[in-house]
Length: 287
Image 1 (cartoon, rainbow, N blue to C red):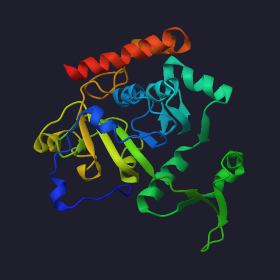
Image 2 (tube, rainbow, N blue to C red):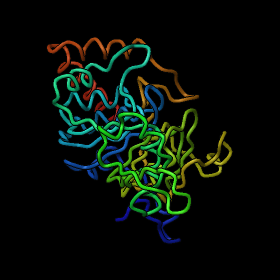
Image 3 (spheres, one colour):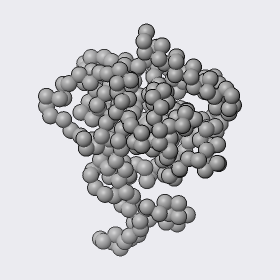
């Protein structure tokens, strides 16, 4: 299936509801997986725990700014490569697993800026091999760490430009405020790159605080922010972003993020935290 596939009229009204376990079968070892949200806001934490539970390996994680969900996947041994502009826990401090692996050189890091990641995803959406951006980055040492970015002269003006290669995704995973059974989604708060991820992905999995009727969704603030035509699976998962926030349903649980950071710093405590978090999610799914 091509990234950002469009479906026929009959499929527009398809019921895309699924369990988290069934939806995550789409994620295979070595896949390029984009995680929606931003730092500690509306992150697909429950889905990340599901991937850890499934034992996925060698994933390439794509995220505008990585937070707890990215760090826990690194700590669970799921990530081989990371593309992001920043990875950390904001006011709580460094992301322990990311920091340790970056310092030890055990995690492949692809340095991104907000511009390069945005352009790369938009190029994938447009089915073009690259998008041109202004050559200002050539004044920094950025091109030394990103040799895949090529400079060229604009054929119209002669001005220096940089070719940003397209970045098609195997899977995009987002957490939504609400969705209907057809996959149409309401996203509130900071959208980050969420509007672009599904259009660049072959498969899009959305976890949602609740599944409502289409009329209810349309009446919500912002209405439909993501069309169901781009969604493959929608999972009703209240609190699926916790301990990160999901406006307006729940705030950031700073105490829980602090507990996570403490456990991630402790080699003895980390396996216990991960096992308990996975089991807690499994119990909620069975309830």
